[in-house]
Image (cartoon, rainbow, N blue to C red; front, top):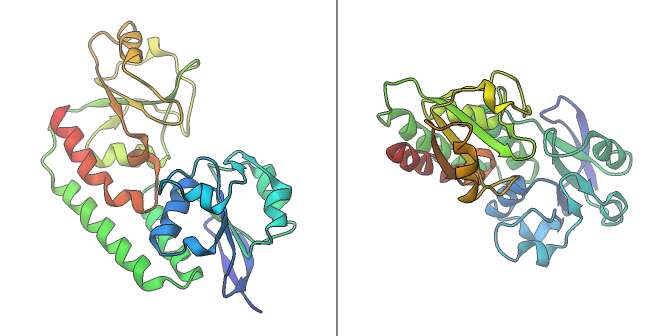
Length: 261
C-alpha cells in the first residue's frame, strides 16, 4: 500500500496509507460529515456521541466518548486513519494513539476553518468533488444569513454550555463566530469556555444550549433570578457547534431564531 504525507489543521505532518480503507472518527460532527460524503462503509469506530444518523454508531461500533477514548480498542481496529479535533479530544489520548496509528486533527474556531476542514478531509478520502459541493452550499446558506435583515440594536448575548458551575462559550470559538454572524455581541470577553459569575454580566439575550449540558425549560426560571430583564431561549446546540454538514441547516435555524428574539 502506498502512503501520502499531509499536514493537518494543527500543522502536524501525518503519514497516511493510501487509499484509506478503515477510519475511526473521534468527533460527532466529523462523523456526520464522513457519512454524508458517502463513507459509512469505511468507518470502523465512532464515539458514543456520534448520534447522526440514527443507528449508525450501533452498526459501526463505539470506541468510548470524545474525551474517554478506548485507546487499546482503537489500535486493535487497525485504522488507516483516525480523525480527531483539538478541542473535542484530550491531548493525552491523541498522543497515545499517534504512537500506533495515523491521526489527523482538525482545529476549528470559525466558519472558514470549518470549511477548510471539509475540503481537506474530502481530499484525504477521495471525495473532493462532493466536498467542494458541500462547501459551496454552506457558503450560499451563510451568505443568505449575511443578507438577512438583523436588528440595528446592539444585542449582548450569553451562550451557556454548562450548569454547576455555569460555563459559557467565549471568544475564539466556533460558537462565538456563529453568534457574530447572527449580528450579536458575545458578552463574555474570555476565550474558550470560561466559568462565569452571573452577577458580573448584563446580557440582553441568554441562549441555553442543548449540549453538552441538556438545558431545559426549568432552567429558564432559575436563570431569571440572576437576569430578570434578559430574554432566555433554549437552542439546539448542534447548529451552533457542529462544524460539518450540520452547517447546511444552521443559517435557516439562526434566521428563525432571530425572528423570534
